[in-house]
Amino acid sequence: MFIASKHTTPTRQRVLWRVTVADAKKICSDSRTAGPHYMLCFTTRNIDDPAAFVYVPDDGRHAEVLHDHHIRVIRGHTTRQPAAKSQPQ
Image (cartoon, rainbow, N blue to C red):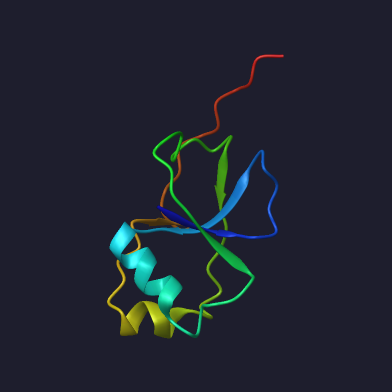
């Protein structure tokens, strides 16, 4: 489960955080995060593939939401990410 920017390309999702399904539901049901700018994405494929997903920095604007709902971010921009695999040409 991850929270992605709505303004992203289909080839490489810009991901803000990876969280549990339960935590994602809390984030998305909070009035402070509801709106057209983020989308909730469910996937079990290639979740750690840097060729498919890039984690973007969290600017802290949703820190209160994370705190108030006791959200545990499983992965984010500051989490160490594996190197991108080279793509065959």
